[in-house]
Image 1 (tube, rainbow, N blue to C red):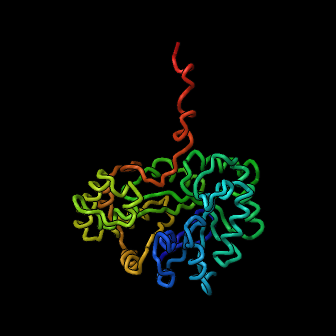
Image 2: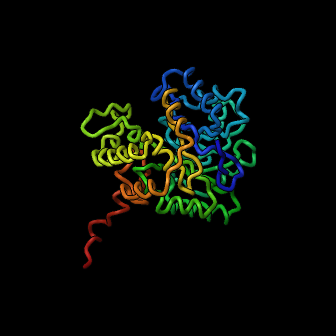
Length: 340
């Protein structure tokens, strides 16, 4: 396994990391012992990055259990800001919640520090200076080594960098966006912004949340576990494009999963892609493709199917800014709408 530097942190991470959402017993692998074995096998294969979140059910507890005796050899990342309870203050990126949430995560992960602590989604209700100030204190205390974001628009990335510079606060060192053969929108602004500020990029969903596993075909029943609660995996437009990628993978002599993973880590702005393996067989399949290199011809043909910087459909988990969610921010009062 080759290793890449995570932005300008100096931390070395594997080009593939483990995304731990599927390690939660409620929505992923129901057997914690099996999950521990999966994590150990990934570590033995050279993967040294594990990414989880406080909102992933009991994922942090299972990861903490698996890392006993191996913690020092793992770059451990987790996230905060998604709701974890009914209390309106048990979410977001306020100092009040961050300081509480980090202690909860440390306890569940059974560690005294987090290598990368990320804001799971932007929190428009909290001043970014407030968030960076709290995170800076965590770095100074030694509880956190580096900080990052997830799903942050390019404009917010730039603003956070400017605020950190003006106020002498810690800078976000990483961004974690969705990226796959089907969703290339981040190539337009997010990846260039991250590269401009020397940020590492950990991408999630490289297999299109299951669409790029080869298990979803046009005209056949969709048996993905996510199909019952995630609409974008049933999007006919996306499935049509998947058929074209299946044909391309066959011509290239590759499984579709290997084509998809090799594509995302070929971008110079991508540091590592997070693998959401739920079972040992899933992990074995993905590890079998770690040495795949895509030629320029294959990459050109991918560009012809989904042009650079474009998305095929919209992910359910995509961040939607308040300017689009709130009618009052996109509609003037009725009495002010006319030009005369």
